Length: 400
Image 1 (cartoon, rainbow, N blue to C red):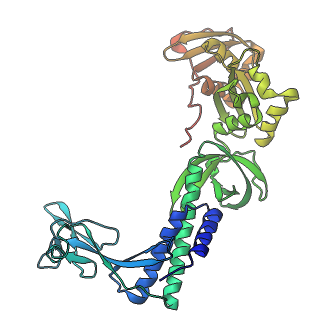
Image 2 (image 1 turned 90 degrees about the vertical axis):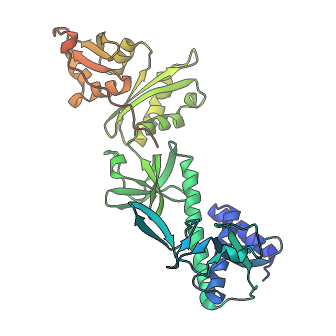
Image 3 (image 1 turned 180 degrees about the vertical axis):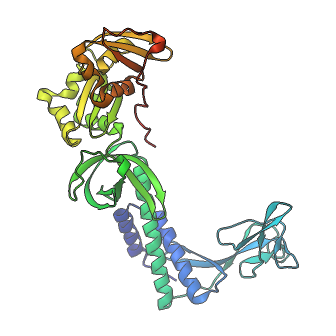
């Protein structure tokens, strides 16, 4: 059986480029399809038939495989060494509380060791006996249709896996896409080679998820589903804020400004702590940009979410004080450095601003700094053991 090698190689290359699939995987898929078609027309149901296409010569070789087994018992089950394979029909038998693999001997796919020893003494139980089959020039309509279905199905699976591999390397990075549809509370984005999904828990309450709108999102994870790998995106993860600033601020890409911590309540308010590695570079000014254009671009992308930019400090009292911005802090007392307890004193007119609406400002400050913060006015007296504190939460959930 011969193929036009030039046309074949050209077709393989074209499919590989269009689908983003390795050429070898395409050839393996065609091999499996030819084996399936051969078996349909010329083989028997239980036979294991394999085929190999040689792109250089255009020749297709077909052969039957039989597994070498040690022996067979009175009930027709294989005895001795048993190797469980995907194409084996396995029965499990429980003996003395332990499960034992039982495989029925089938002359179409098994051969006894004593028989093959006569022709090849090197074979042992578990090995494969290769039996070349007669080459055929053509296949029937049903066999050809079977081959086509195998190729289409396997190429679809290979393409999905290729896409999943590509996006696995991009987990934690930013992507951009157009909203294609909504299913229940899930939002689906066309992100290029595939669709990504923003689950309800990863959505921002401020966003308008109307079809056709372009959004940036964080690639959160790749999840395996019965329909294949799914690209999970997020619009609420704290790391999204970090990645948006990386996109807008060249100083971050140049490594002269560092993002040290981020805390976020998606759709409401975020805090981001930054520091400078280079003297003369203002970290807060770098993120704000001329006339506030950089931070405003990020705010617009997040549908109006408020952002506080804070200068990071390795001095806990200074960092905690800055984290409570926009409130002005009078004093920060470190009550317990080991447990990270801090008492913050603010003026009466700054108290509600420091706490924030429903405690949001002090809560975000605690997340950002990792300190338990208690905000008091100077009139209130307290002891360390009486401190009512805001517990810090993890700065962000890890991107898988």
